[in-house]
Length: 248
Image (cartoon, rainbow, N blue to C red):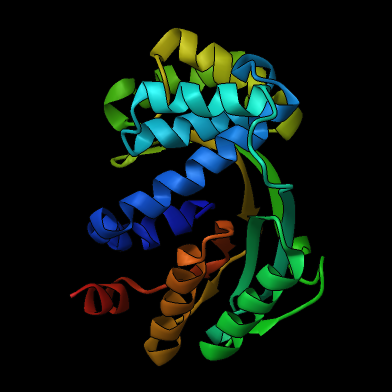
């Protein structure tokens, strides 16, 4: 889930990851394998680099990651996968972008459309909501990595566009063309980041509360759980008191 507000709002969903661990590994292995087809060198392949970081974040074994890269580099993964993007609105008027990797566009489109309808949302046309977001490179470091001033100075020197630091960590954003250079410079200085990749960042947020918030979170959970879906981004904000109630 991309965007500053979403990292805060969706953290409550992290508690039940064990049940989804196998599915998560399957998705990440596929991401790495497909990305490695283009170039097996993560230093020259932004998507592969992001996939490896995501795999490390969930403690995927190093040899599993390496095997996935080798399969992709050797063209051994049989599926003809392609990246597709779906856009629409969820309950409460929240804009949603769904990124998927699929070997059957008709199947995935039908499943995504059904999930939107089931949970009170509406699937729209391509580019129907993406104008409400900007595509940026995002790099996350824990708060203990460095002081806010040190991170800001290092990120600025590396070519980043913005840094937001707080108790939960440092969020570094940059232009997508600068992502590889910025990430490499920060990793050289501070070590591997907690997370990184190209994300959709909302230009403005929509406050969603009450029953709409509950339905919206269920929709996002259902989309995340789909085998073909890779990333779900939205521009919603849920009031803290509503989020506390839904997390109870």
